[in-house]
Image (cartoon, rainbow over all chains, first blue to last red; front, side, top):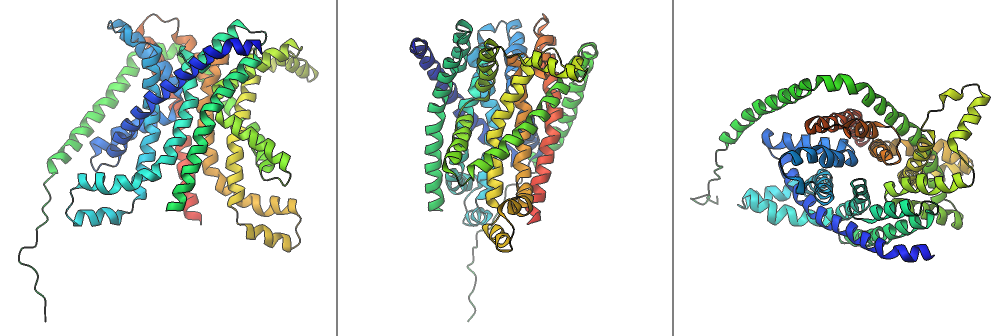
Length: 221
Length: 287
């Protein structure tokens, strides 16, 4: 009990780090994901193929491999170009989290756009709206409510995947955990219990909120 | 009386966009150049490939073996979990629900670290050593040389992966079983089958078809998550990459090892993704 009490402040600041990683990566992932989704659904091959390749590669390689590639591989190159200040856990962690999740969010965006009936687009175009107006005024407002539950789901996945940043010693819960376990190696189980409790505290309320909104959404449709 | 059309019906004119299509052909040229450039990039590092490919392939083999063993245990756990969640007895239901919620609410990395550095350390203080136990066990069959050196990490890695994916597969199997119409089991029961026969002969054969696509998706993420076992020093593909790349001083070569390793992961996972999409397409047609 004394161990948990002395570890708690460090773990709480670790939880703050986890939240910071996610809150900064997820909007970036959404932005890049929207761009990728628009590129992928483009008529032009020079837009759709790069987006396709990016999405497939990102979804078929482990995020930890991408993180190592960015931090150690690209990082070593950056050091050669006198950009060593860019080679830290925050930059590498946020970049790899947002790029990896962008690929998943792109698929969510695309599924959302496809779920809006094509007749709506046809009607809007025949009423004289431009394709840009059609997208922002007709398709997007109807697609967003459908996309919110998968987004919240992916946000919870990101809360958990941000633990992977600990392999490059970012300052979040799992890094704090590794540090404390290395100091109290003979009695590690309470520390793991504390970390698991913190992750549950972060992810379970989010998932219950998501389920509540999903239920309301089902009722509304 | 015939109604005449208004004189000036607005003519829909679309801007000619053919110049953008020209970019398509330009793009094909650039794509071909990029592919050739990448092949040339691989070619310039042919010595590195010749030197390190055997180790990387060995790591890839460990990755595949790990994923297959873990997914088998995860399926058993998932099946038990699904049975528990659909059980008539409330305590069993609560137990299964807690398992699923706790496992799905925490990162797999923390779980793996907990199994190896937490549970593993406590068990070894209590005198349990998986390496030694497996060695003793295989000695009976006179084949203890089959037990690899890093068996302890491998053992806890498989436990961690199966425990984690058991929870995800619980939800997959439960959704599959619940998606079989209730009328089917009612009909079977009224025809005189008992409840285990209903499960084995009626519900499961139909549920398995529906669970195939999400199951394949989970298997793909499982294969990718075996890379996390590098944190507990299982010599799989990611760990092989790190052990090769870390001592290198040449930054370009270092980057190349990581890119090449990622390509191997791509070669393992992308066919699986195609298979999952094929299964999804077939499922959409089947009903």
